[in-house]
Amino acid sequence: VQLQASGGGLVQAGGSLKLSCVVSGHAPGRTFNRYPTAWFRQAPGKEREFVAAISWSGGSTHSADSVRGRFTISRDHAKNTIYLQMNRLVPEDTAVYYCAADSQSPPNTPAQSMGVSPDSYHYWGQGTQVTVSS
Image (cartoon, rainbow, N blue to C red; front, side, top):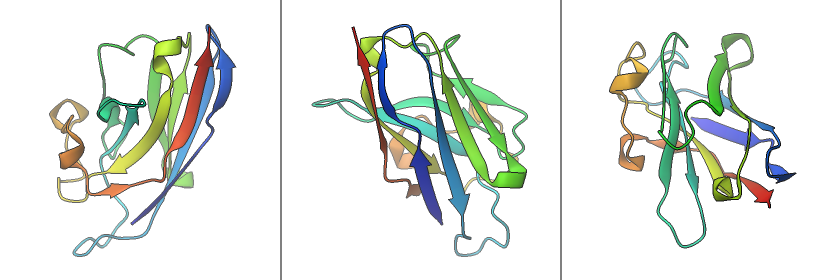
């Protein structure tokens, strides 16, 4: 399974960015590319933290308290792509953002039941830098 994240950049506080993550390939034992997927972020000197998750169907999502109401996760099956729309950005959002796929949970796992620990995810994208200036 390969994940390719993009869309990061430098933005002023209050601005917006939209991250994309293209998911391709099949995990061992999986016939189809159907994975619950999440976004994480890691700021310098800090641990990687959960941002948002989405079920394979896209019918359920779950977000961290720190971004709820500002960030929206979505997916486009036709493009095998997961998005993270980030609005009203603040300097504290500065981090490397990673997309991750859970290749072991059933595809129909609700987002609220998906793990918020990085250990719950088995495939990772390379990360994209988001910098918010004050």
